[in-house]
Each structure stands twice: as structure tokens, then as C-alpha cells.
Image (cartoon, rainbow, N blue to C red):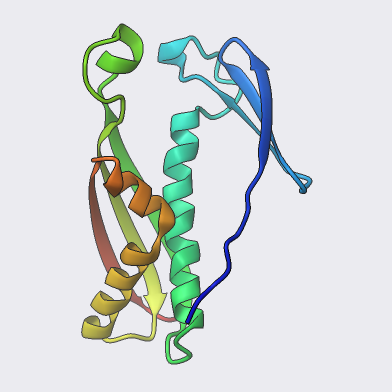
Length: 153
């Protein structure tokens, strides 16, 4: 089975560490401001917060897509928490290396109708297919996931 190539467009502008991006062809815009450690005044989430939020929400959306393709999977509420560490030596001080999260831990609890064996397969498939998780892993981030299967209410 083959899908289609989806196109995304963004147009952004800003001053200092505050930036607003308009989603091309849509009604949404996103404001981001550098973390307070980088001169931000906490008027908007940082781009790093958005990157982590993208991972959390992409995990859930990908799970829903996986479940939609397997009519025997029923899902309820999701809870996705993240913890991450960023060494700012490269970003702030110009040290040699890669400016990236060192590690990210994603803790997922989701209500399902699956037994533990099928839940493990489901979680592995979500991790394999999530584009944002792929970006994190491909960039060298130590990405750890912890999944909990909760009874479907």
C-alpha cells in the first residue's frame, strides 16, 4: 500500500528571540520565544518546548492512526509525559559538537482493549511509524519510551 506525499508550508518572522510562524493555507499561527536562559521573557513557549510537544502529540496521533488501520484496537484516553535534557554548551557557548537534546524519556499511558502481548506490538508500531520520534532518534537523541496499558473505560 502506498500513501501520498503531504506538503507543509510555514512562513515566519520575528525580532530578537520572539518569532511567529503562520501555517500556510491555514488559520493557525505559532508564537515561540527563546527559553529564559537564552533571553526570553516567557511570553510564549520556546522552540524546544514545541519540539517536545510535537513528539508527545505525534505519539498520540500516530497511535490513533495505527488503531484506525486495525479495527480490533480500541483506544480511550492518553497521557503522554516527557522529560528531556539539553546541554547548552554548543547553543549558548559555541562549543564543538551537536546542539541537541541529550536524552528524552517519553512515558505513555493509554487505555486499550489489548492484552499485554498485543499492546507491546501496538507500542512498537507507534514508535516505528511516528515521524517526530524518527527525527529525534535519527538526530542521535537517546529516546526512551515507557508504555503502560490501562483498561479501557
